[in-house]
Image (tube, rainbow, N blue to C red):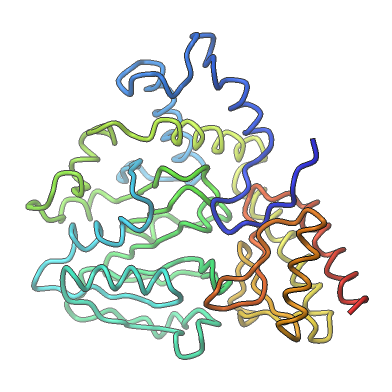
Length: 359
């Protein structure tokens, strides 16, 4: 079967090996005569999947014992509300670093709950760069600092993270597992699964005990991190199939050589496309400043809108999927998440060079 060159921003490409294994087990999980979707979330069969996913994530990200790993629902967008509901008291301020639409949305939701402030932003330059870490100074009454590690729409990504005296919370939906990070720099990380972790439907939350102990008590049960931590993400029926797929994805990352090997390959894939852009004499121009370029989302423009439309139309004819840029930026976007093969990036560069030559 011929596979598409899938550069969708999310839901995104999944490894073919993972899809094949899921297909093989879909109707008969471990010779049980049942699909994993049919098991009770209280069964020993599902419990083994659940615990393996937690164990593998801890191993891959080197998550210390004083952090909880939660599997929640509602996507990263629900976390925009859960974070301030749990951690923003009336006497404190929530600090936000704005680097794109999703960080804006996170702050907008927090403003409905309490006081917020923007402590750094690249909005004035249409989010073409990541703010300098020396500019990130928490408020005197800061409850936490929130940032978005990778910006899918604008193609920017944090290369380093600030070391702060207040809790640092990061939305890592689009670059988690793509590179090595120091978990100890963060009090909380959350990520929707549909980029590097699996299909849509589950959100991973990694949260430090110290932060959890200081969370608000009088909030709805389903929005309370303490409840989910106490119940091991089994307070209600979890998205069992999405967690099963997450477990397969984590197993795949381990089989690739872990995050160091994944990071090296991601660097190679991104460099291939960025080099093509940089050597095009301005035919392809990136949105992000070079020191802020994302390895996950490569955003670029062509000289005219007419050429852009022609490029996208031709790419679809050749089997490329998802190269249209987001409406707020325009142009083109190639999302090169973990599961996008190097060969797909090679094929894209070959097409880009041929298109430039012809036009």
